[in-house]
Length: 195
Image 1 (cartoon, helix red, strand yellow):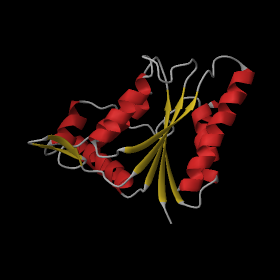
Image 2: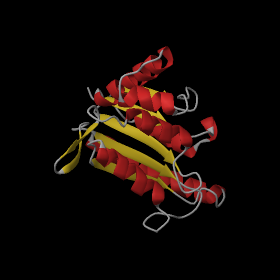
Image 3: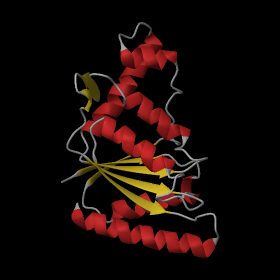
Image 4: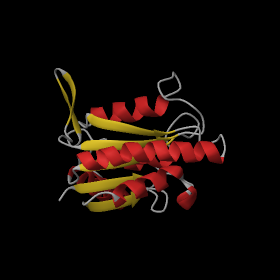
C-alpha cells in the first residue's frame, strides 16, 4: 500500500479550495494517508536558531528541539511514496507556512548535497502532486511563479516526478469556482487511477 503525505498550507481552513481538492483526491486513493496541516500545526518561524539547528550542531535546548522537529519532517517525507502539496498562490508566492516547511527540510547532507557537478537531491523515488490554486489566471504565464518555485525546490531535493493540478480564476465568482473545481477533480481522478 502506497504511503501518501498531504501538506496543507491554506489559511482558509474549510473554505480553502486547495484543501477541498486534496480531501477529494485522497478519498479516491487506497493508501496510507498522513496529513500535515501547516496552519493548524504551525512550524516555528525559521530563525537563526533553526538555521543553526539544521545546518550544524545544535548548541542549545531550543536548537535541539528544532533539529528534532526537522528530523521528524524529513523522516515523514522520506517515508512517503507520494507527496500531495496544497499550494495556493498568495501575492504571487506560496503561503509562509509552506515556505517554512521547505526551510526545515532543506538540509545539506540530508535532503541534498553539493557535488563537483552541482547540487544533488537525496529524496529520490517520490512522486509529487501539487494542487495550485489561484484567484486569477496565471498558468503558463510570467506570473506562474508558484509552479516555478515549487518545482525548483522539489527538484533541488531530488523529487523530479511532479504533476501540477490547477484550479484557477477562483476570484471570478461561484460559476468560475465550480468550473475550476470540476476541471481539477477530473485531473485528480486521472492521477488517482495512475497511482
